[in-house]
Image 1 (cartoon, rainbow, N blue to C red):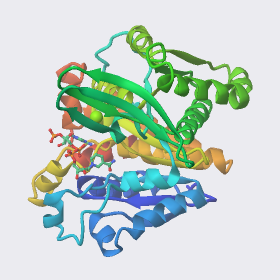
Image 2: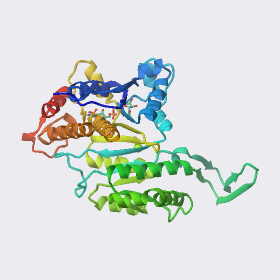
Image 3: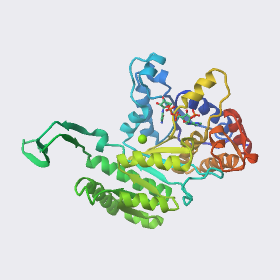
Image 4: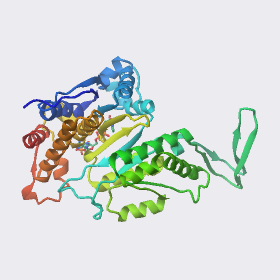
Length: 400
Ligand code: NAP
Ligand code: MG
C-alpha cells in the first residue's frame, strides 16, 4: 500500500511527560504507517524551552502563521516546583498563553462522544462546543477595599486631559469596588473567530451576555457580534443553513440544558470559565475533550484539553504500568490532518483522519478502553476490557 502524501507540512509542537510518550506511540503506530507525514518540528518540552530561553515557543507560533495548521502536545506550565525539578533559568510563561497572544486566537473545546460514555444530561445527543473569550473582564480587574464613608467614581482621562466621570457609589460605610475593562479589537477578533468556526463546522452559533443589566459594557459585546454578523457572515450562514442566536446568558444556560446539543456556544471570559467546566464534566472526562485555537487570520492549532498527566508519568518512570487515555491527543492529530487536507485539497488525507477517529471510537464502543473510561462507562462490565497505554493504541491500530 502506498502512503498518503502531504503538500504543506504541519507545525508539530512536541511537549512533556506522559503526553510526550503518547505522542511518539501515536505517530509510530497510527500515523506513520499510512501517511508520508511532513511536519516542521518544534520541541516545546520544558528542557528545550529553557535551553532556548523560550524562543522555540515563539518560533512555533510564527511557523503556524506561515504554514496555517499546527498540532500541539500538552506542555508543562512551570511553577515553583517545576523550576526546581528542571533547574530552570526562570519561570517561563505558559506556552499556550504565548501562542495565543501571537495568534490572537479563540479556543474552542468540544467533547468527543462515543458509545458507552453517556453525558449526564440525558437529552444531549450531540457535543456542545464551548468558545471562551480569553481577554479582559474580571481577569484583568483592578479592585479596592473601601474602608469607610466616601465617594467611588469611574474616571476616564482623554489624551488632552479632559475627564469624564461616573459615580459608582456614595459609600456610607465599608465595602468593595472593582474596575474591569475590555477592548473593541479583542471582542471583534473573538466574534470573527466564532462566526468563522461555526461556518467551518456547519454548526449554529449561540452567544449570551447580560445586556439587560449591563446596558453599556455587555451591550457592547452584543453590538459588535451583531455588526460583524450582519456585515460579514449573515449571507454565508444562510447559504450554509446555520443560524446565529443571541439571548441573555441565563436564558442561554436554561435552553442549553434542555437542548439536544450540537451548537457552538460563545461565552464571555468568566461565563466561559464556569460553563466549560460544567459542559466538560457533564460529557464525561477531560481526557475526551479536544481543543482548537482558531485565529482571525485563519490559522489553526489543535491540541488535547488536558495536561501532561504528570501522575501517570511518574508511575511510568518507576517502571509501573499506566493506562493513559490517548483519545484527545489522537483527535488533535486528526483535527490537524483533516484541516490540512481541506486546505490543500487532499481528500485522501481528510478521509484518513475520519478513519482514524472511527477506529478509535469503534475500539471504545466494542468495550476496549483505558482505565479512566472503564470507571465511567455505561457498557455492561462483561463487555469491558481495560488496556494499558500501549495496548489500547495497538487495539486502535488493529481496527485501523
Ligand atoms: P492533567 O495533566 O490534565 O491531569 C489531571 C488528572 O486528570 C490526571 O492525574 C488524571 O487523573 C486525569 N487525566 C487527565 N488526562 C488524562 C488522560 N489523558 N488519561 C487518563 N487520565 C487523565 O492536569 P495536571 O496534573 O493538573 O497538570 C499536569 C501538567 O500539565 C502541569 O504541569 C500543567 O501545567 C500542564 N497542563 C498543560 C496544559 C496544556 O498544555 N494545554 C493544560 C493543562 C495543564 P488520575 O491521576 O486520577 O488518573
Ligand atoms: Mg476554570
